[in-house]
Length: 111
Length: 112
Image (cartoon, rainbow over all chains, first blue to last red; front, side, top):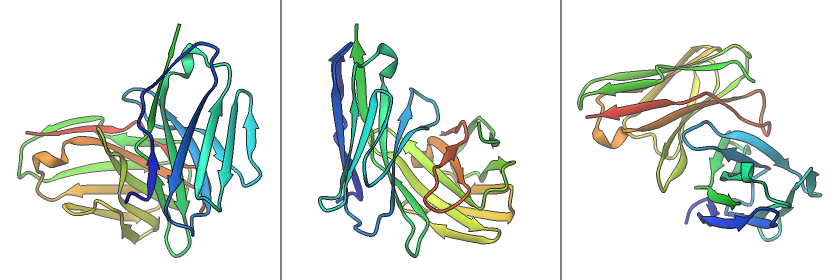
């Protein structure tokens, strides 16, 4: 079983739609969680960190459920420019210093 | 943007030759990481460093070695390149544990 798992998609949604991605992780000692965005053939860039209480940044909302070991990303009012691959990242820094990535979920927003 | 540079950006080499990729940072960050990215696998951790001369293996370390003799440089070496090492390699840095990662622009390596 992979340490971090995501639905690869693709998710094809119309502009203005709301879309949600989930990510599960297997290591209960994981301490920090992030969502990254990656455009084709470019380096990943931080979209947002994920905090225990949940957090929002404009149209983006991230949630963490430690009991069930998953994190989620909600995108409201999707824009064409949101088309990208969204990567879930889990940092396990207890006795190690690893940041483990999910394989990513592809999103395509359609006009 | 974080000051992180990868070199070369592109490289084509032959099977069996040694290859070294360089990651250079100007941020004085303690932690540095090498990942490879392949279709269907996402980013997989090769090696990482938590200080000068302090390195450890990631999930796909076989066939790779690393060195970090100074804070700003983290080198990834393929001792004898194989076609299975054709990939995009990303370096990442972070100032502290549980902080966000900043990525370099990547190196596209082709082993023929």
